[in-house]
Length: 429
Image (cartoon, rainbow, N blue to C red):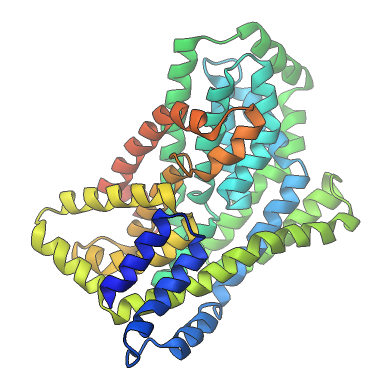
């Protein structure tokens, strides 16, 4: 029965069926083969209903909604101006500002695609006017947007925590240093590229000089409430005052106050449309979560996690080798599957194996999420490639090819994060 399930899953992925259909068809396949199997239709339906019955998942719609509000409130421009004032005149300063803006905006939205759309719509036209090549600009924004799912609050962390019963608050805290490590690696390549290809310093200085005319205090004061968002969210979780679900609710209230009453970039009548946008983003995710929970329970009944752990431990004795194989497998999965389903399906499968290797579940969550972030810019199906491509009028494939140095930079960060657990666990324990 396990072979039938895996065959349905692999064939469905290869021929390009919708991932939800692949999950559901693979889940019910063993019951059709063996009517006496405990994982029958009734069991699957109960699992699907139970999969959505989790209070931790309430954080997802709240973080999505706060990201939508902040996006329409023009928050990314205010964050970018602060970094451009400080770093704009340095070699590669403007591309580095894009990376930092994605890092901070990710702490608001928790979504890579949302970050790519919000930051890209503002920074891409500016960088093109400054003379940077369209493909480089598109790959820069697409790559940096992956930071949004590593820096807290992260929707993938919520999904991983739900699938593995790991503390979501601890995952949020653990993501801070890895997010910074990845951003530094991306910025390093951005600087190297800018020095190698050259920059139009006259255009860059003209933009930065305009910012300096306003003075740092004016710019910082204008962006203060936007920059304060991650401090409030992470501070609440780190202090233990609120849970991640409560922080998600706070983020919505804070986003409304900042956008409507402080910046006055959003009107009350626009809220209904934002709720609609949030619902459209949430609906497929919620159904995917419920189906993936049922899929995971069937895999457990068929003992796939234990079988995988036994196979890996029997054939590979080195912890380093096993972790490298896990990373390679996750990189390939990230190229073809969306982050949510990948985490929900494969995290419970890998957990017994990594537990046997004494890998902390929080560390595994960071490793898996970093791999999924790299998948955002990995051809052929990197989601941020498709988000950024229309903005620079280049094909997703061309942007993906140009993103290869950024992917290598991310892989360097991934290896550091994988083999130096301190980066993931220093703030947790």
